[in-house]
View 1 (cartoon, helix red, strand yellow):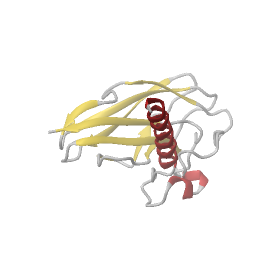
View 2 (cartoon, rainbow, N blue to C red; view 1 turned 180 degrees about the horizontal axis):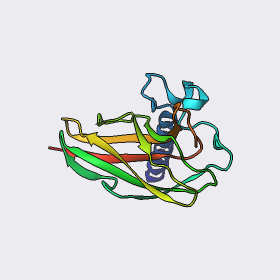
View 3 (tube, rainbow, N blue to C red; view 1 turned 60 degrees about the vertical axis):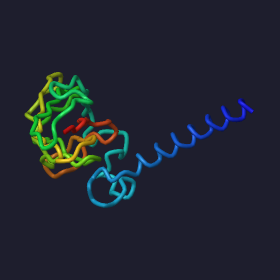
View 4 (cartoon, rainbow, N blue to C red; view 1 turned 180 degrees about the vertical axis):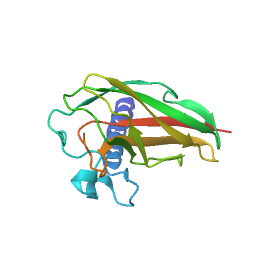
Length: 167
């Protein structure tokens, strides 16, 4: 009896995990009301694996401010800063991080500029955020785009912030 219960529990966990992964794949990360899989490939955060510009690449270096899981008070204003490295052979000019939204209700700009960055250089990119007025978790995803809002590194995971909003 105990083995049957354990086997049933393992199966249930596997089913829930697969279901959650499938659901995450179809989240409305672009804030359009459409699932990510229904967006044009150029707007999908999980689009084609290769860069839009040959030789283009980026690497996450670190969270400069607001590490994942940081507690922030309801309604608080904070600045999230990431450090990225231009890991490719293409200079970054006229580039932005674009918000693809996420759960929790944090409010921030839709796009933030990336300072010009030569290959091999690192750059700090900041976004001002306002926490929602209700407690909970808030997570917002960001990807690199050009001045025309074209996704540049669709195969990259992108960056995000994740905070716990508390009373």
